[in-house]
Image (cartoon, rainbow, N blue to C red; front, top):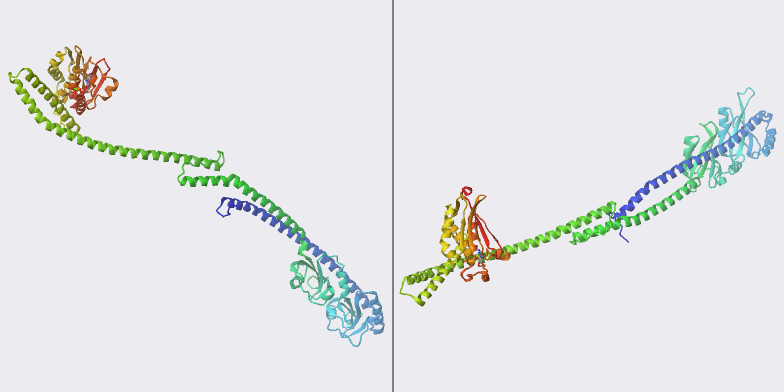
Length: 617
Ligand SMILES: Nc1ncnc2c1ncn2[C@@H]1O[C@H](COP(=O)(O)OP(=O)(O)OP(=O)(O)O)[C@@H](O)[C@H]1O
Ligand SMILES: [Mg+2]
């Protein structure tokens, strides 16, 4: 089970679902509130109807009492103050009106002189409310709750004045005491909903009748203070929510009766339990909430499962892949299917990013490897250069040291050969000594030249040089050798050959090397051509022969030190393999280039260029 934290995507999804449920819950509660309000109004109307019904009943009761009293007031026995006749008549009437506890008459001084029930002694009633009101208003009056002084019962007494014939002087007050026990029975017949209560109070709030349990409440103050306060302060129709004496919340509705709205004689209050009133609404609320919980539960389950299936799994795959990539596993991909959704696009973008990262990383690795190798090569190169330098230094030193003794050997051999007395075998040996000394000196000079050039210690003494003169000169010096092999030498120097900007001795060296090679590697009776042409700011010299030629592979090595093709050279032992290397370096030192075109058995052409003077100037 995944832990539910607020930061988790799924929790947020669930919260969103809950958020969507809140308005529905609010709507349900609001509807219920309205339903309750409606029910409340209905119940209030019901209570009001009931209280009006009850008050109408009571009004009728009062009206009956009034009529009875009006009639009684006209009776001669009353008007004439005949106690005996009056007592008998009233006792008779009381027997017929069971709702009354007593009927009687009180004289103007407040003393009762007639009563349906027998009186024991003098009974004073001048202080009773009904009496005083009847005198004041000279009309029918409703009293308040009282315990009858004759009956000893809880009663509500009505009074009516008995006036003289002119209708001015008060003679007496007739009264009828309504038996509240009987009134109570009336309340029980009102047909109230279960749990309801009905209370009739006098204008002081004393209970005249009550349902249920009326008997124990009659004569007491109404025990629901809130309701009582509302009734007495509003003095009219009204409703109030208040708990009953049993603590059960009720909806009370009340109405006045008797007298005017402003000064009612009594009030009736009906209380219906809220639970009964709102039973329907509560039931609907319970049902709606249950439905809502069910729907919310289903939505949450769907959000949980759907969120897992469509979001959380993908996001986890993405997070997992991201962490692994962050840890350096650049080959990791989300493995999520391609699609149109944002998450699929995100996954696709992530995979692409990982791919680029991977490629960039590989590229960086390769670059690093390359840099490392490059560095190694540079180091090796430096080492080689250093070795080369040491070698060049060594060769140059050795060559230099060898040249002096060799020159003296050569000098002495020459001197001895001048002596004509030396002949035969001696002269032959001396000639060999001289020849080898010459060769060695040539080799040493070549080596010294080369090491000087490689060390960059050679200076060119450039002048304006006319090749049209120099070439025939060099060719002429080699002519004896060439003719000894019966080779043909042809010069093709063109017209108006420009002068070149070059060192005459070095150009002589270049030409000598190339022409002597042509001579050396061309068979007897072959031909050699030296041609010179203007060539785009340069003068190009081609030294061609009809000699043995060179294979493509040999051509690639021809300008490297000590390279010689021994077996194909007729005079191989004579060369050193340095001539062409020196030639190339000298040409390049002048700013020219040397090239070769050749094929085995087809002869060779060595071409080199030198800067023409007008271009160099
Ligand atoms: N014109 C040519 N035709 C055929 N082969 C040639 C020609 N010129 C040079 N070679 C080949 O190139 C090699 C190198 O020539 P290079 O001039 O450097 O040395 P070499 O002539 O042997 O000795 P030296 O250093 O005395 O000149 C030669 O040994 C020869 O085999
Ligand atoms: Mg050579």
